[in-house]
Length: 427
Image (cartoon, rainbow, N blue to C red; front, side, top):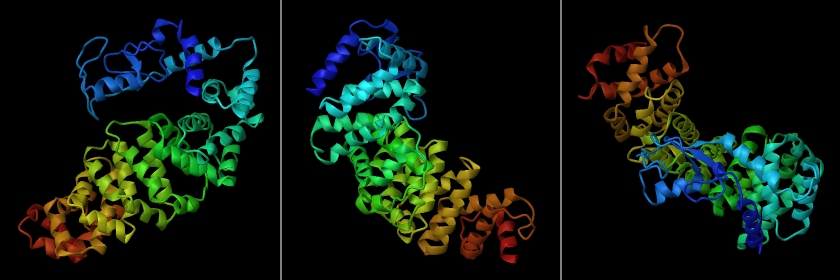
């Protein structure tokens, strides 16, 4: 019934709309327009299906060849067109000259009393996204509390599709609001533990759009509040990290994967328990597999997560036991950014200090870690004992002092850098 009602609303709206609002593939009104390299704009779901489900390599409208790959293919959100479409939809769907404020009140009444909530929630989200005064009125009318009640319904009947769909749309509304320690939404999050449980359910079982709303809310909470994640770790633990890692592992760059990395960074910083749960969920091995092909921004955040996990014995062991663990981290040192180099050196220091096994020491030599450490020393300039040591340089010296004598005897040791190793030993 909910789908039927929503379809009727869409049909009346889609019957006559400007041609520029139409996706060239589906011929339907676009909701998430993106522009590809040929300059043509499509509905995101339609062009993704064309390229990645049907494995096409051409632009459907121009038949020009497009490169498909993480570093080659780019979908740019057409935010201007999206705003124009949203404004048109709001205007077209108004059956009376009621003001936007009156519409908010009417929509909230429908959400609160009617079993058919999806279309009203979707319209609320569009209105809130477009106009600040609507957002203020929504809060004044206790919209946060009303929509939160929709979200937690998923705990009563998580198997019902219409309940899940309404929950996702409700999260879409809530994701439009900033979250800080003083905000109404954070107050609801703190008082109602079932709300976070509902967010976790959508993160685990929801659609791509629903999962984006869920992880966006989690990111806002993690970055802007002092939320206590202990309860979430107790209730969810591994089951929270698994869907986050799935989003991070998305083959194509998305806002969801970026948000998931931010969420993990903040949660892992909160406690050792959270780090252990992430390790049990397979975070170390997954991130090592993703690291070689990651972009600069993702690489830095993945290394930051690995650094947090390597503060635990379980994390260090997982990295060492992965056949490419040390090599993957080493490859990013001096190749990505100063931030990546600093984090990479710190990870190697953890490994060198707590896993000084012969195999590990030999692997560091074989994969080029030793050469890169000596290069950092060389780039720092001057004698090792001189003043002005950076924290990264100090860490390099510690590693070389621990294992320099073993590496120097190796036939693979770079002869041109033996001078710096001698300085370390003499210091």
